[in-house]
Image (cartoon, rainbow, N blue to C red; front, side, top):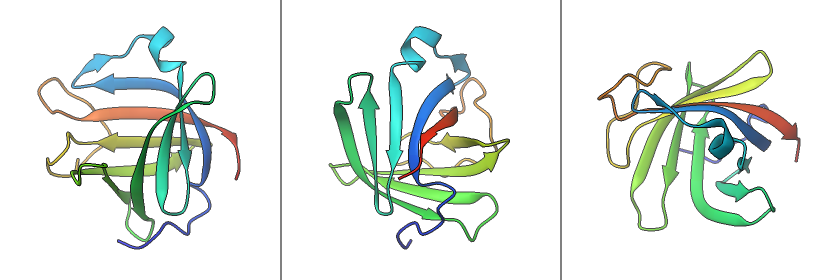
Length: 123
């Protein structure tokens, strides 16, 4: 995959809802996390602007839905799909090393994480 050049996905995004393997993440946990999506990487930020994780990130926006590949510091790939819907970024990612999700959901046993994020600011 090539670096992300689709500006729709670039920016700082506030996590507003998350489901992991069919279980909704508590709001008090969700509200602590933001994601900074850059052209070639993604950063996970906690409420005090501390970057707690940074990884190589590629988005292929020519696909429908867009496909993401995040390479963790240990070299493991996380595959996902994403889209912009009603001004929000919606994503669904698989467990590290697992196949890419085929839909935006998180059923019990799927191992998928479905997230909805609201744009905080552009870059």
